[in-house]
Amino acid sequence: MTGTRSEDGARSLDHLYLAAPGSGTPASAGEAGWIRALPAEVALVREEGWRPAAPLTSIHVGGPGGRAPGPSGLNQLLEAMEVGLDARGELALEVDPSQVTPSLLVGWRAAGVTRINLRWMPGRELEEAALALARVGWGREGDVESWGVDLAFGLEGGRASHLSERIRGLVASAGPHQVTLEEAAGPGVDDEWLADEYLGLVHTLDGLGYKAWEVTSFALPGHRPVHALAIWSGESYLGLGAGAHSFDQSTRRWNLDDPGAYMTRVGQGRSPLAGSERLAPEAKRLEFVWRGLRLASGIPLELLSSRGRALKAGWSAQGLAHEDGDRLRLTPSGWLLLDTLAVALTHALEVDGWSYPDRPSNSHEEQTEGETPGAS
Image 1 (cartoon, rainbow, N blue to C red):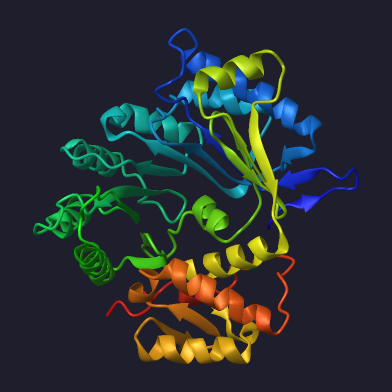
Image 2 (image 1 turned 135 degrees about the horizontal axis):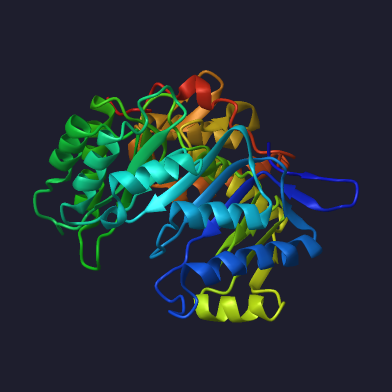
């Protein structure tokens, strides 16, 4: 589902993002202030015609520097916001590994959390948190629960990387369901070395059974994150909290970044909106192509003009793409050139007067889940 318009014209959005209280949250407010602010913002955005669907398909709580709410706080927040998930919905929580304890994990499970995502940390906290998840049996029962880790690559700055060994160690000891790679290289790091690092990690993950469903995200079969997949597929979502973004297929909007300013504005009954943009047709086309090439599902071949098919043939000859049934999919080497290739293909689609589809589609995902394109 991508979100629909009801008879009163309101946007009913199936996916909800909640920005966790970040490091700039006033000490006097804390988690309690955050729990008061988000329900107040829900009321404000509903007046503007934006509202969470009932029930929701996914709820994701997180954000850079944010601290995950405790089980009781999470329960209070969702109850105050009057939101809930459908029977197979996903409630995902981004967690600082240093925050994790077995008792907290049991509490989050009781609160309805179905996915834990551990943020990257350079020390041993990430491995210790992963072992805590293994001790409470997180994710062992069917496909209801999942957990994943974010790992930064490129930090070695051209020296031999130990990240592949770290991944193998995590898999052997705790077995995450999802691995996300984040480029964290600073200025001066050689692009060719970074590319080799990325391709090596793709090869390692593929050999361990983790299939790429998009450029930076790898999952075991059946464990791709619902919320992240929806966002990268171009589905509609509502974002609440400091710095949160929302999208309804035609308009993108975002809140004030500063948590203190956000809470002050909401506390005064005023919108915390910092800006918005209505996507022009050209921007929609580019985003559609960029997202399609970013995903393992690729782009339907039927959308390619004669010029687009010529591009496809050239990319395939260079090992940047390949055909998979009726789709054009980039290989990991092609993903390294994603922005350039997306712009070129967008222009090729425009040659024959192609127009943006009414609804994004990820229906091909199940058919491609078991294979990382070109990773072997």
